Length: 218
Length: 237
Image (cartoon, rainbow over the protein chains, first blue to last red):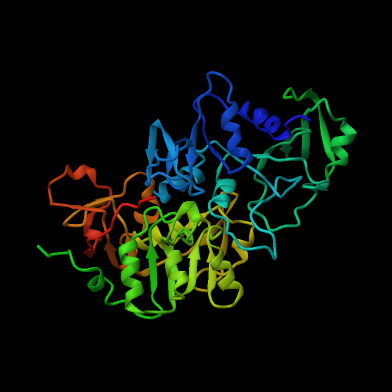
């Protein structure tokens, strides 16, 4: 059985160019940093207040003044710059953080995203997710294509939105999709699946790009 | 020159039931613990507390005691919490569900700008954050509806300034005039909150003489600081 999450993270890592400034969400998005192509160095935004996030701190070597947005003790790269919340989200809304990589509960064919609240579930809050989705020029969703068979890519979101029409790309174990004016276009399809498979796993009509390629990641 | 160094007890002596308290910190990194001690000792209740999140409960990241806003929530003195995220502090959801506390969720960047607008004389801010989401429809922290404005073809929410009664801030280093900076990731809300309340109190980890360090060391001007309290310590894991 292929490691589907590693496949998704590896494919997402190809989205970046050397020097990009990017925000990676927690969970699967964080893994993307492990698969950057050789020669590509990106600067990671930590929304609690710095540009230049690195790996988790080793136990015993933590700096108590350096946490990531999840509260874990982390290390930073040599060119790190720390700043306050106002600057942090100014960088986000100003479009200077080029891309944010996030998971999703639901994505609609017009790019609407729902990933912050389930009515009735324990309240957590949006944190910085709404700012990131409204502000970053590119919102890339990395996720398994369905939730145990239930569609997550839909005609319209049923859950409360994180941001309207913000998603630019969706990367799943089945393929790579772009959100365009007229709907969702499959630009890469994984060889393990057919067009019929990916359409059946999707709750809205998919368009297949004439230049569609095979998704290369194992 | 006015002596700004007073005890924590003196610094919060004007705090009354129902007041609004701004508190720096991000998951308790950069939270003013000695000032929280002092607030708890006053016995005031029904506070509106404003910060990034609900702080950290016992057990989070191995902590043997609660830190930050969570301590005030635990003590039952918060009737309204305004924050961007409370996922680390289950007690907040429990109290909200039990009707013991009100919660207003504000996107993190928006919360910072509402506070900054109050400190720096703006009539509000226009932000694309929250358009078309539950944030657009929710009433703000004072129960007001939000306007949606379209500018050059793009929609924005008009968010009002947010003033507090007390801003409680934790610098890493301050001089005796109140000029200060916060090291690394302890900056978070500790910069925008200065001057956004009627009273701005800082509790620095280290206090130095005026002119001891290069003035360029400091990020926030001491003219915004009313009082300085000693005794804040570095967090020990």
